[in-house]
Image 1 (cartoon, rainbow, N blue to C red):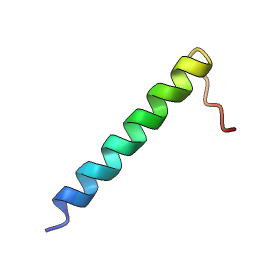
Image 2 (tube, rainbow, N blue to C red):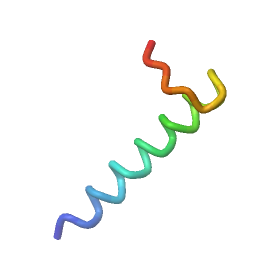
Image 3 (cartoon, rainbow, N blue to C red):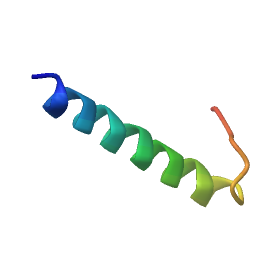
Image 4 (cartoon, rainbow, N blue to C red):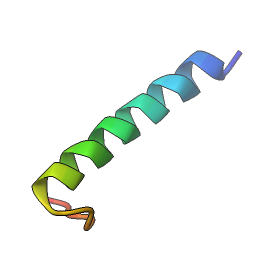
Length: 31
């Protein structure tokens, strides 16, 4: 099954989005 890997990727993407959101009010910032 591909489910566990997909869940892991979604978790990573979500955490990255939360970090970027903290850095700059919802604007996407890539260091």
